[in-house]
Structure formats: C-alpha cells, structure tokens
Length: 261
Image (cartoon, rainbow, N blue to C red; front, side, top):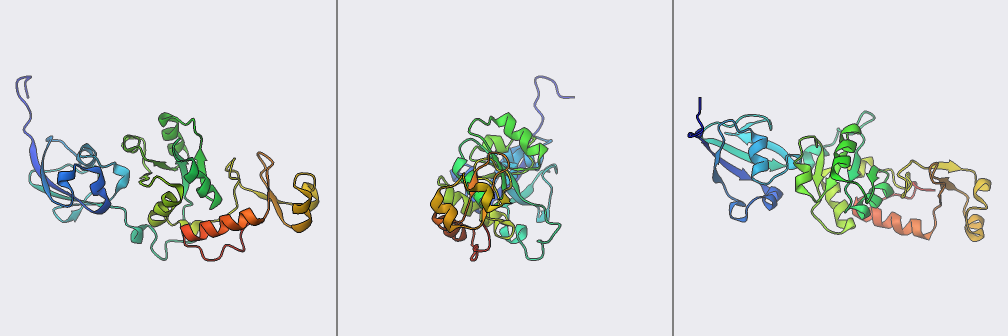
C-alpha cells in the first residue's frame, strides 16, 4: 500500500507520433522519438491524449512493433508508435457496397460552411450555430455520427467515439480534408438534401410549384424537388451548375450531371 508520503513509481516509455499527428504535440517532440514518464497503470489512450492527441485521430498504434488497442496498458521500456488514419485503409476498393455504413456527421458551431457543403453533397449533417458541446456529444452517440470540430478538447471527451479534427479554416479546404479521410466520393448523393433543413428532398410535379418559383424558372425547367420540412423548392438552374462544378472539384466527382433536379 502506498502512503500519502510515497508516490507510485513511474514507468518509462518512448513515443513517436507520425505524419500529421505531430501538429498536436509539443514542437520539440515532432518527427522524432522521445522518452516520457508514465503513471504505472497508464493506458495507450491515457498517454496519447495526455501528450495532446485526441483518440479520434489515431488510426494505428504499435507497441514494440505489434498492433495494440487504445485501452492496452503500457509497460516499462515500451516503444510506442502512433499513426493517423490511413485513407488507403478507410477507402480501400471493395469496402463499398449495399451494406456499407453511410457516413453521418454533426458539426460544431464554427463549421457552418462545411456543414452546408456536406449537405450539398448529400450527407446527413446536423448543424446549428447554437449547439453546445454536451448536445454535440449526445447527438453523436445517439445517431452514430462523426463529430466535426476544431476543438481538440471536445474530441478527447470519453463519450465521443467517432470524430475528426478539422484543420483548415475555409469550407472548401475542410471538405477536401474530409474527402482524404472518408469515402465521400463513393457515398456522395449530390443535391439530394435540403441545404437548410438537412431533410431528403422529394421530386414534385411541375404544376405543384408553379406559384412558388419565378415565372421564368417555371417556364424553363421541367424537374423540381422540394423539402418536405420547410417547403423550399430546388431546380437545376445556373446556381446549381456552379455548385455542381464546385463539388466536382472538391471531392473528385467528374460527372454530377445525372444528379439534381
């Protein structure tokens, strides 16, 4: 038994964080192996987050050259290598198919532009500028959603199982980041959701929207979609064409012409 005047002996381990994970740790420890004193009962997750890296950003851990889980306890002299998620693993050919889990997101209050782009690409993305951290955590768990945020403390919360730290400041670059980590290209269903409500759009008869759209639009277009929640009407006009080109460039989809209204 350890008395109040004694401290449990700490164990020595060596760490190396690879590639973009270096941005989370102290500058002097980037791109190198470094020693660290750990509590005697420390797990991989405990030490990785204590050193600054959210558990959601870790794709692979090796201890003494062997794959290890985040809850594995460290031992004296452990050589720990930590790698980020690999796009080649997440998006490998053959992983797609009818049973593939559809990506769903919840974005924090600072990522409104990214949320709109994700909805534009057809992804179920919850967003509200008033979201608080506790609400985001609840939404992520209830719907198995990926938390999108620039707040590393939010990603370190125990109840956040799926998350992604968004590094870029501009929405277009942020979407590009996600496309490099997740199979956005394969799962995209452009222009299938309301950009405001996040609800799936439904096709409506042309005659049903005559009084809801400008006369010139109604005369030029034959296909329309509507949001069952807010009633907004969408059609394939010049704005749609600009969005189509923007999306195609960001998530590497060459032909979006068949999608939309």
